[in-house]
Length: 195
Image 1 (cartoon, rainbow, N blue to C red):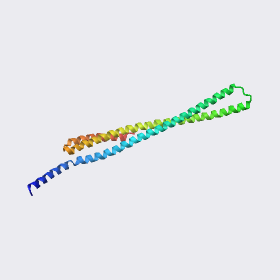
Image 2: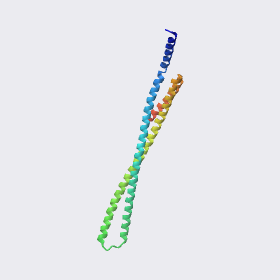
Image 3: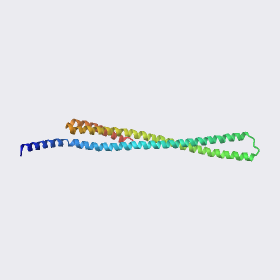
Image 4: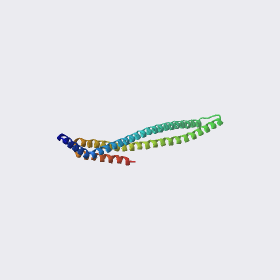
């Protein structure tokens, strides 16, 4: 064997020794990359859930507004009928049978309107309750998403800092990257545990 060949073999062996010592770093980086992808998906899904809940809250709000408008129209109609009844009571009507028939018609209409008003108010309040429920779900989803976003950012920082180890061969970057990653994992788990 020539001196050059022996020197090349020695350099390859030394280089292989360095790459063996960096295998845990490479494995850690692979795991961190997978964790970043998973946490990113969790964050996106949680943000999507918040948007869907906001949309449902807006729909419920519109339905509640419609119900209150319908309620108000019925209330106005009821007030007009009551006013008409009061006017009929004051006026002298020659045909008593026609007056009684009109009063009965107004009384029946008032009774129907009272039922409609009660139902309309119940529906409107039900929709308002739906709005509050969806708004609460939006708040919860956004709170959860904040944890996922924070966890994702810390995992990405950990991944980048760990990759510096491959360039510098200094393990301090690997340890620092692992520290960021652990905090990112904790933030993600906290987001998962939120109800």
